[in-house]
Image (cartoon, rainbow, N blue to C red; front, side, top):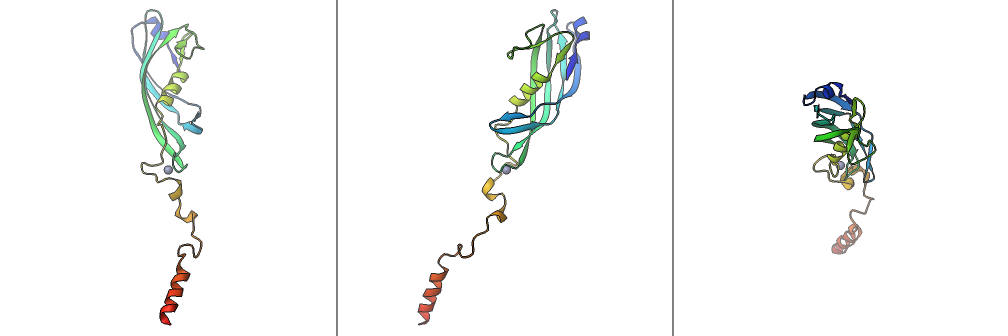
Length: 163
Ligand SMILES: [Zn+2]
């Protein structure tokens, strides 16, 4: 998403509201692929006398990744607040700053970095997920006889008592 800042540049100090969505690419984190729904971004921006654009607001989305315990799909709400300044004609390649040229501020990098910052350390399908071994009780049928290893011995003892 882009913010058109033409008006703001002509009226320094005047706040403008915005509300848009930003698609975010899948993220590879700790060997897992984290998929994010389109991010809702809303807030305000204003220009200073030098044309630097201050943008503040919130991002909101839902992230999806495998559950850390059972690997089923898990989701997490993602929310973050930002307050950044895009430097006019700053170095667009510099990862340490936000910059823009012309009359449009590209929000993708900001939204992506604030969304990634707000991701949970691990995803769980539910708070008390017991993990893989209990995921499906039908997966591990006991072999006949295994449950009662001493059944034969018991039989032998009973036979002896009868004698
Ligand atoms: Zn789970």
